[in-house]
Image (tube, rainbow, N blue to C red):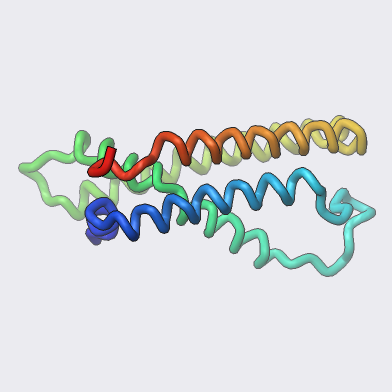
Length: 152
């Protein structure tokens, strides 16, 4: 739809998206460090807000500039100029969704298998804070490596 090209050609939009992504990663790191209310089975509050997690995942994916760059860089290498674009784009999208579903499904199964080990509060806190520090590192890396290309 040209949104990526629009952002790439507008320093203001690019910087706004860049800063939003970095700040969102830092916010996620902060939330992870301080911890949330108890969510393990049997101790979690009965009324959970599934929409909160859906919104968090959506915002995280929408603020990821690497996704747009991936599609611009990789998708055209698989497109045959002699065939209709719409069919190819649909097929490539279905393949991508299938692979992503397998990868994410595997992650869910592995996490479920690790759940007994992770339910230990001490281990959980160490892991959560370690991942929070990694998010801070990723935010710093993202900030330092994604300066607007036209002004480097």
